[in-house]
Each structure stands twice: as C-alpha cells, then as structure tokens.
Image 1: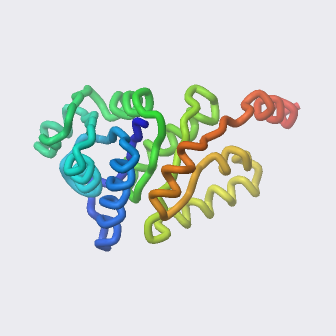
Image 2: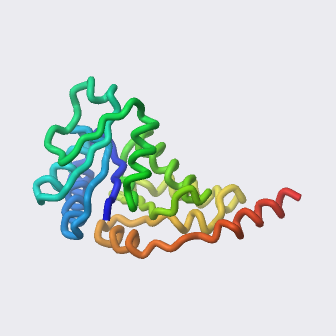
Image 3: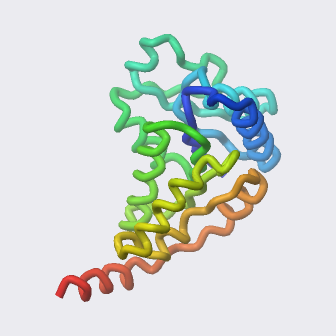
Length: 195
C-alpha cells in the first residue's frame, strides 16, 4: 500500500511526538508500505522517512522548488520529485497515494488533510483518511468537526469516514478496511434541504 503521511516540519515540544512518528514508520514498514510525504529532512517528516529508510522500504518525497532552495530536502529517499508549487505537491501526493495519515502538524498538515477529506466527500477520490491522534493532539479538531455535524454543516457519514486512533497498528488496519460513502444519497439530501 502507498501511504501518504502528512506531518509537521517541526518536532513538536514533546519527545513523544517523535517517538510516535518512528512507531508509525515501523508499522508501515512491517506492512511493506511505500511512504509518500513532503520530501523534507526536518521535523516529524524526517523521523518517519528515516525510519522507513532504515527498514529498507521505499520513500518517495514530493517537494516544491521553494523548499528545495531552503536546502532541507531529504537526500536519502528512494525517489525525490520536485514540483513548482505547494498546490502541485498536494495534488501529486493525493494522486499517488492509496491512503492518508495526518500526524500532528501545523497549517500545512491541516490544509493537506482537509483537501483529501473534501475530495473524498465529493467523490473526486475515494481513499481512506486517518488522524494519528498522538497525545490527543487532534481532540479539539475532532470536537469542532462533531460540532459542525451537530449544527448541520458536516454530514455524520463524512465525519465517520475519518479514522481516528493513537495506535499506528489500528490506523493501518482501519485504512485497509475502508468503505465508500454513498455520495448520491448525500447529494439528494442537500438538494432536498435547499428546496
């Protein structure tokens, strides 16, 4: 399975984030996955890429030229693809990967995560998405999404389509069991609401 991991270019302020990144790399390697990621040699991105490389697994980095120019591209990956923009990187990661895991990260991670969620919602893609909820990092985001469900702005089935766990083995198993949402029913429901 080709798994794209979205994660921070920072390490975070607790070493357990770094340990979790290494654990995720270990689990993905055990399941013979190929890692797709943002291509940098910093932060949690470096930790997971290094673990996969250490285990002899393929690692594909997709990196914008502006980040290459910052001299933080990982030189040890199996394949590095340089693109013109952050948007192009995001789209290529989405095209290439079979599944997505968002580790703790900042605005870039959230942007990438929600791009995949929306494309799944619209059925442009149909690929599983998971939050690696290390140290309950995503609890407040999950609370917000649940609030949006309760207010009628996000469908429960779309929220339920986001896998959440702090256990990398559980994440992998759930990604492997992904089932599609019936988009036709969702579209009919929103048409009916708008009449």
